[in-house]
Amino acid sequence: MKEFRLSKGRDRTKIELFAYHLGNDLIVCIFNENAHLGAVAIGEYDFKEERASSSVVTRLGHRDDEIAKRAAHLIARQTQKPVCVISGIHLNKITKQEISEILRQADGLVMDFLNELGKSSEQD
Image 1: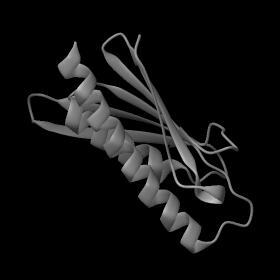
Image 2: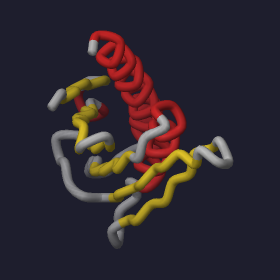
Image 3: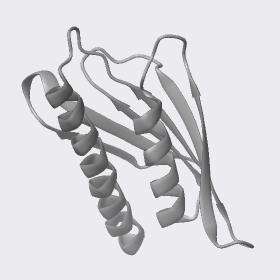
């Protein structure tokens, strides 16, 4: 089973992505040094409608849903595979600037992951 480990940022805004296949499906975790289960999203590709959709469940008091849902939707759309994204990023006294940076880096990690996944598929 091939695993993917990527990171972006530094200091307080450093986040990581860990992913692996579960059969033909994908499990993706996006987290920082304070990793936890903040939100879980499922993304799926509808071949009949030729579009992806995603659903998210967020733990009480957590705000990790935006990262999880965006990542699940994008990964499902690009791979046309079912994906489960678990997001858990926590920073004490987070600023608006740090939130923006983390969201940007999460999007970048997902794109890097998709590029790595594409390279991996080409080598198989």
